[in-house]
Image (cartoon, rainbow, N blue to C red; front, side):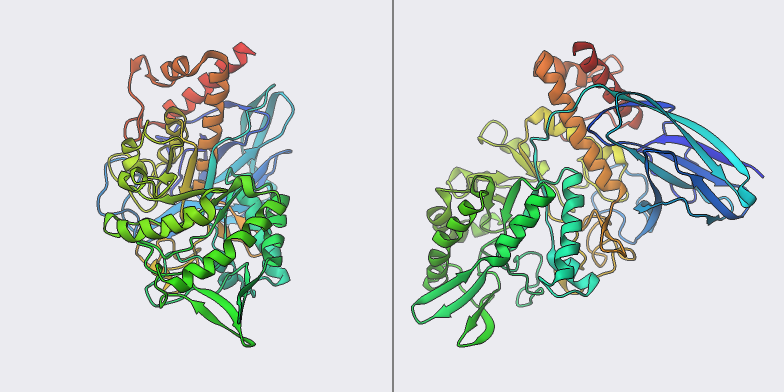
Amino acid sequence: MALKTYVLTSMAKVFLDEEPKNDLQIKQMSAFQNEKAAFQLAYASDEFLYSFRLEIPENVKVYTVESSPAVIAAGDDIDDYYLRTKPGLYPDLLRPYTGQAVRMPKNIWRSFWFEVEGLPAGKHEFKLKLYGDNDTLLSEDTMIIDVLDAQLPKQDLICTNWFHCDGIMNYYHVPVFGDRFWEITENFIKTAVEHGINFILTPLFTPPLDTMVGCERPTVQLVDVTVTKNGYEFGFSNLRKWIAMCKRCGVEYYEMSHLFTQWGAQHAPKIMGMVNGEYKRIFGWETDSTGEEYKAFLSALAPELTRVLEDEGVADYTYFHVSDEPSGEALETYGKVSTLMHGLFGKRFKIFDALSEFEFYEKGYVSTPVPIESKIEDFVGKVPELWTYYCGGPTNEYYSNRVLSMPSQRTRVIGMQLYKYGVKGFLHWGYNYYYTCLSVRDVDPFAETDSGMAFPAGDGFVVYPGPDGTAWGSVRLKSMTEAFQDMRALQMLESKIGKEKVLEILEDNNGQKYNLSFTNYPRSQEWHFNKREEINRRIMQLL
């Protein structure tokens, strides 16, 4: 029997049917004490094994990299920096591994994912031992992690991946705001924070996102509303409970859900309230966004909500949305409701939205615009805080994204790009969106990764719902975390030598200078791995 193994970087994606000969093999890497250092062990046998296991090294988290199905593996408009683009199985899910014996099919390539964090400074050697039937030692590899005697600076990037409460409700069949709902939600938010997501979408009312016109998503509303003969009364007990939970998890920023519908702000979100003892919808698709009735509602809500956020100590870290991704055709309507929002909330809070036409900012309709990465150059040097986002696109011209079919280096390189451009915040719409497009039906993310064959696989979520109510990570989630760590390492080096010199180092590709941008970067995991090692070395030389 012959067993083949490769020790690979975390940027490798090991497909079931392909020997990873072209991926970078490593024996050692460095990491700071407060970052996640990851690598992989790929393996395959030319014989079927009934009992196969890994001996878990001490002080290491281990996962098996599982393949997820993708029907729509890539968009229609693509470039040549993809691993594959056809329907198939793509390595993505990270399943926690506890040392149990499993079967190994013949000639099937798989990998273990190793993660090290928080070890004392020094070189740590890890023996990677694989055992077969009757506990026969089949292979032994060695990996060394050089834990550097220093700490990366705290992440200052504000990062949100939209948290969808109804994804938890639907998958786990738990009622909203029941005990189990709160437990699972806290687990998912902890995982988000552990991976650099420090800004959480907070559903004041059911978020009016990705919903077919005239239809509804399940009610998720933290603010209680009662209609009285004199107007409205509000209850904030669930909102206070939400904020307390987020604080326990380490959340730093709070993103209030959109107060107008998506793609143009034409209507109010679904808002439920008690009316003469009956719980019913009081605003929704039938509500004109510029009407006096909804204006009166928001005017009553604003001062009370402001007092609660101030009382909870989070007002300075709270942002409000108007409407997601309005187009130029909606400029007039967006301007009217945005003016109302700025009057009610803008003096105390920042107003921000994902939008890519500069005119919205130029007219003063949004204080913090969040353009898609393909439009960010239109905003560079013209706004006080530069933010960006991506979603199912762009998927061409080598823009970074995090879909299953892309190389992990393409996902991870955004950290270097965010650093160069001085980006303050990053937004993505899908932390745990377990629906088809427009939320027509819910999906099992283990079986359906492309939102009902609507988006490139992986666009809607970066975590899988574990059977125990915890969020299972993905290769893509880890790649984004590593991107943020790269950004922090560059900032650390900048504090020693200045940004100009850091960019000289970063923009060197084997002796050739290139101009790093959102479309231009060395497309190589070897370059990326070596560049991060160089940055680490330079930092340590200056300490």
